[in-house]
Image (cartoon, rainbow, N blue to C red; front, top):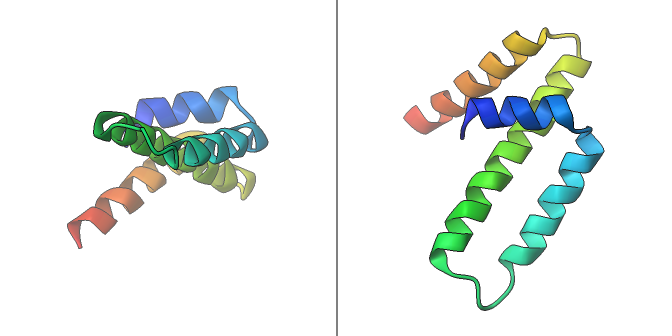
Length: 82
């Protein structure tokens, strides 16, 4: 997870565009000849894109952009520590 990447995706794309990209990457990840390195990159991209969708939702619910991004980062870091 890279917060600057999540912010970039969130600021420059609609949730619908991001969701379409997630679906495309998920489909590509099912390709039989994908390498482990490519799979790691796809996983990282999907994680960041899902984060952008979640930040979009928090903003739509009334949270300030910076607070939404920080709340998402804390949520992810909190789940890793458990």
